[in-house]
Amino acid sequence: MLSLAAILLAASFLIGCAGGGSVSPSFYVDIARAVGPAFFTSGEEEADFLDTYQQRAEAGDSEAQYRLGGLLYAQSRHREGRKWMCRAAENGLSTAMVKLGYWSEHDDSDSIEAVAWYLMAEKHGHPWAGKYRSHVEGSMTLEQITEAYSLVATIGDRSCNFGF
Image 1 (cartoon, rainbow, N blue to C red):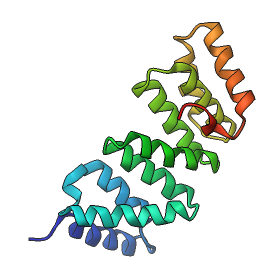
Image 2 (image 1 turned 120 degrees about the vertical axis):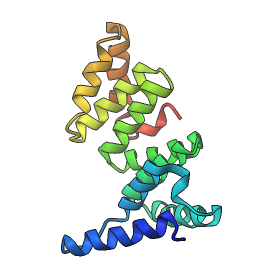
Image 3 (image 1 turned 60 degrees about the vertical axis):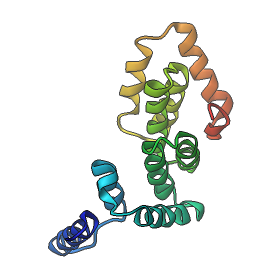
């Protein structure tokens, strides 16, 4: 019987051929995130997958840092996941900043840190960061909002100097 990974590999090849190009490596990460542990037929297969992304992340690939951070966080390896997501954010990846804001808002219930991340993502051109920031600010005091803005002004792009 074919593993889910083999079926997805074949499907991605067909999609890539039909579209005249290839499928991004992030396609596999998105599929893995969507189907969870069922994606891998063995712990060894999962380890190989993570090793590949770790190598790319260590080489400075911000997209790999983002994907690896998300996968590790989804596996309840929060500290490691945040480390890689943070590296992607420091490399200017606005989607990583939004993800860190989301984790701060929803997992940590830290609205000040969430607004700070959303502000940084907005500064880096993320199209929805301003909406996310406004939503969180709606439940904050003026003092908390001021603290979040001050935090960003103080830290700047070295965003991982706070929170983790």
